[in-house]
Image (cartoon, rainbow, N blue to C red):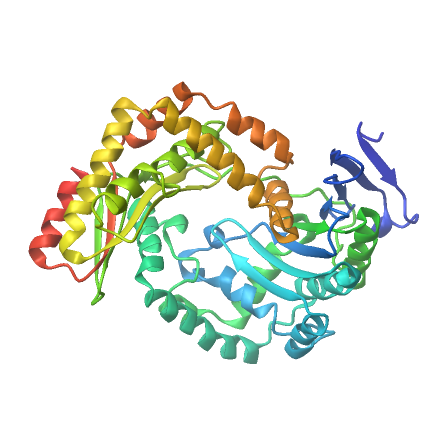
Amino acid sequence: MTPRGFKATARTSSEARAVARTQTLIKGENGIGTVRKTTLPGGLRIVTETLPSVRSATFGIWAHVGSRDETPALNGATHYLEHLLFKGTTRRSALDISSAIDAVGGEMNAFTAKEYTCYYARVLDADLPLAIDVVCDMLTGSLILEEDVNVERGAILEEIAMTEDDPGDCVHDLFAHTMFGDNPLGRPVLGTVDTVNSLTADRIRRFYKKHYDPTHLVVAAAGNIDHNKVVRQVRAAFEKAGAFKNGAAAPIAPRDGSRTLRTAGRVELLGRKTEQAHVVLGMPGLARTDDRRWALGVLNTALGGGMSSRLFQEVREKRGLAYSVYSYTSGFADCGLFGVYAGCRPSQVHDVLKICRDELDHVAEHGLSDDEIGRAIGQLRGSTVLGLEDTGALMNRIGKSELCWGEQMSVDDMLAKIASVTPDDVRSVAREILGQRPSLSVIGPLKDKQASRLHEAVA
């Protein structure tokens, strides 16, 4: 029996080409903004968003694997694999892969996060079949040759060195370790010099075969596209590679995680001869599925999300103590982070931390004014829409939504969620999140006396 809302399409009588299920998840006006999903018998999900007014299309494949899925010895394997899928397949060399997209003026890239990996290409709408063929070939036919592993090792070690040379970036990895410790969420996505040097082609191949099964993948495409054509092209590419080895299979469910140990009141200092001290002061946040995330988003925007935010005004505008100061949230399957970042002269670090801590404590106890909350809601609604003005952003939204939530939310529904946040909602989440004892990470050339005083910021 076909589930309600699904359209069954039989391709052939063979098991490999059995019934696919197609559903319209969001119905746009005149086809604009329509989001459709097809689940193939092999467990591969394909979601698309149609935008006929543009001349481009972005095609991506999301893998249900990130650095969180690594053992300590495999730390960095997910990111290493991301590099290696560009190095060649049974049909294409590394040069063939890059030149195919370059020849049509497109762009292709990938990124690895703690809970997922994404490979994508953005091209003219007429060149979408090429992008589909190239990206699908990379995901299903990668060779992962030992010589490529050895060559790419050097590039990854340089990437690690580049990150370590940017303390404003590195301090966020340090903060994750401060909060989560020696836990997958606390380890760097890139891995370390030691773990990257220890990874072998054989270990990476096993990791690839385990995590790149079609049931672990979500295909997403957005732009001037036709859903049925995308499905046919993707299906043909995966079947050509023999990817549907299990016949009928169900997609993997969204990650629910396991409760991750979180600490409070920890201080980690990494001494570096830098011109600035880079600090992150923060505490546990909310999981990405928590309904209160909309209120936390408003709180984050009002505290440190723009030039009118409290932290920007108090630290930069009124006192000139930092050029860059902001707050942010990170949500995972079962937990989250709330952090405040600032970069300042080492001699000013204690003043900056005191101001930030005072503001967090004040908002935790007294909340934000109605005017601040109203302004933050307007800012968040506007930035949400403006951030979805290109096909790459649309592809990211629908792909991540399917992989992480297993559902789609229209832009109008998202705006309604933000607009429905009340001052009481924001004050409640402020008490819970900001009322916790914070932890602190610092990178910079702090002297012993300065370092010993850092514990005062989290006392």
